[in-house]
Every structure is written in C-alpha cells, then in structure tokens.
Length: 274
Ligand code: IMP
Image (cartoon, rainbow, N blue to C red; front, side):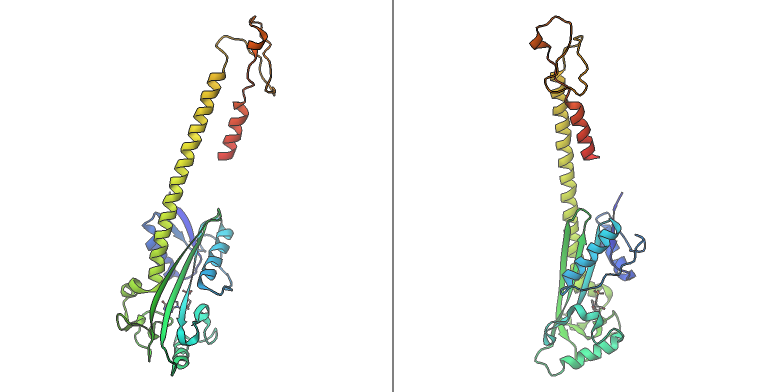
C-alpha cells in the first residue's frame, strides 16, 4: 500500500501538481480535507523555508501523517528583497493581482535595477521527527508593463529573460520547466525518493539484525536445554542459580539448570517490535 502524505494547502492546483510528481514514487498525496483537518497556519516565518516547515510540522502533528508544506514569493532587488514572504499581502490584503502588479511597477520605476527572482521552499515533516527541505529559484527582471494573460499573481510582470517572456506569456509546461516552483518540486521529489529508499533499506537491515538475534538466542537456548529425559524442575520465577531437584542421581553441580531466561527476553523483544 502506498504511503499517504498530506499537502498543507487548500489550493487544488498545488495538490494536483504534487500528486503528479510524487505518484512516480508510489506516494499518495491527500488534501487537508481528506485528512479531516483545516489548515490555518499563520505564516510568521521570516523566510520561505521557515513558513514551509511551519505548515508541514503543524499538519503533521494534527494528522499523525507525513506532511508537506510550501511557501513562495517574489523578491525584488530594488525593494531589498521585498515583497518576499509578504508577496501575497503586498500593498494590503484586499488588492487584486492587477493592483498589486501596478503597485510593484510604480515601486521599481526609476530604481537602478529591475532584477528580481522567485523563490519556492518545500518542506516535509515526518511523525518520527525527520524533516526534508527543497528549494527552487528563478531569476528574471520586472517588466516595464504587465504582459500576457496566463498564470497568476506576479506572472504578468515577471520577465524570464532567457526566454524574453513574462511568466504570463508562457504555457504552464514552459513555466514549470524554469520556474522556482517547478525546480523546487523536482528537487523535493528527488530528496523524498532518496529518503524513502534509505528508510526502506534501514528497515530491511533492522529486520535482518532482529532475525539474526532471535536465531542466535534460540540456538543459545537449545544448547543450554538439558538432555531429553532428564527431569527438570519448572523454573518459575527462578533466579539464575536455580537448582533442579531431580532424582537422576547425578552429582549436585551437574544438576544445575539455567532458569530459561529466553522466556522473559523473548517477550520483551516482541514488545519492542510490536
Ligand atoms: P504561495 O506561497 O505559493 O501561496 O505564494 C505566495 C504569493 O507569492 C502568491 O500569492 C503570489 O503573489 C506570489 N507567487 C508565488 N509564486 C508565484 C508565481 O509562480 N507566479 C506569480 N506569483 C507567485
């Protein structure tokens, strides 16, 4: 059965994207709704990586399942890296994308540089405390005017200079090949694939070691068993020096029987691995 991961977002586009890329690893990605929770994590981090991890950890502890969080935004050199983690709220919560883009164009007008980049961080938190992170970056410039109709957010004003197109002028496939998010997703899939195969290998090694221990315990016990037919007292709660009260006539020293320590030991082991 495939392992289920919760993606800490209510954005169906992001869910679809993550499902597609992780299905190759045999991983099932479910929404917070499917996991029976609502994600309401305040993005209080000062970096994308902090916010992504915050979401992943909160959802992981809410659901008891491995959880993935992400955060991304636009960093403009002329705005000292802003709006950055405030990209979604730049200029106020109630602005439309078009109004936000116009505000951005006004803010960079006449500045020495129009350089900018998008960043995307993806984090994954596992119930055992393990974490994974991946990041993607895409460099470009702020266009002089909004261009193109595709995409969302700052896409019409972000010019990916190697293609001389704004993100909004690209097809989703073109954008995904070069975008911060596409890169972060692919890097995350690689990191998760490596983590899962290393974990599977470790589990196999542990299982192998456990079987070897059990086998050598069983062999040790067999070697300590008295010969068939010898009368042995039942060693109930017997201390290590428990003595057989046999009547076989053997000298006392030879009638000592180990108190079957394997009974207790085995129970402990089973408890440990249950
Ligand atoms: P989120 O963390 O992916 O939800 O992104 C936060 C904000 O960053 C969005 O609301 C957008 O304003 C901006 N943003 C992130 N990625 C993109 C993108 O690929 N194109 C345009 N805007 C983006």
